[in-house]
Image (tube, rainbow, N blue to C red):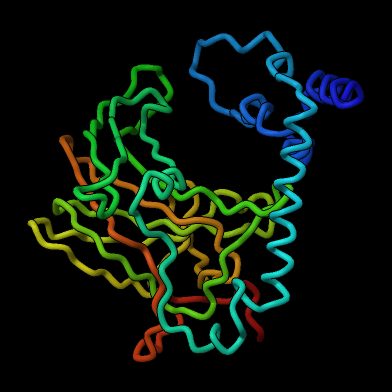
Length: 303
């Protein structure tokens, strides 16, 4: 364990803590908070940086490290068994004939813990967002207050957004996992809103590092009222954007490399909002034959 302390000490002093993320599952959950600080890139203008190295706040425990190792080995065993059985632990015939699939459902607090909420408070805004279970533990209720007032820091030009995003899937030993939705062609949701338009965001695994801000968007319009509505959004309708700008070069979603999914509200209307989500699923609509709804072109066309 002393070797691990020296290793983290040298890494943090050189400013390369993010390269040693693989040590986190082995050292246990006691270093999760400290490791996360190495990834924080935003700092309010005028605020002083942290002087104390983050590794000094780590509570090293050999017992916790052994327990974390056992947990990761059990996850690896389960993943290996599911891989040998078939896609997602099911037989290949079941996978090919599958027409619908529920990805996220909200019935308990554990289901809500799989999601993360954020707002413009991160950049000095004044919007508020909360997430809780709905009435009779049926669905998730996302509510709050949208405020478009721009923070007076001399740098921020726009403000007023609230979002909700699912945590990315993580495999054993902190490996990245991706959802394979290539067997489906539509996103299927059961929601109840207040009439505000929402943006549905799908994140994929970037092939190059400069594509880390790319995501696919489409609109979800809620009609308000006391009744639930079922919304079907074909994947062919999602368009590519990066840092809030729609890209000229459009291409379909890589459905075999889905990282996570989220919702964003930014309609520039101050006031309270509310969105209830019963479940989020996938649908294979055989009647939908469209491959991509937008124009594509070749960068270097053949002459």
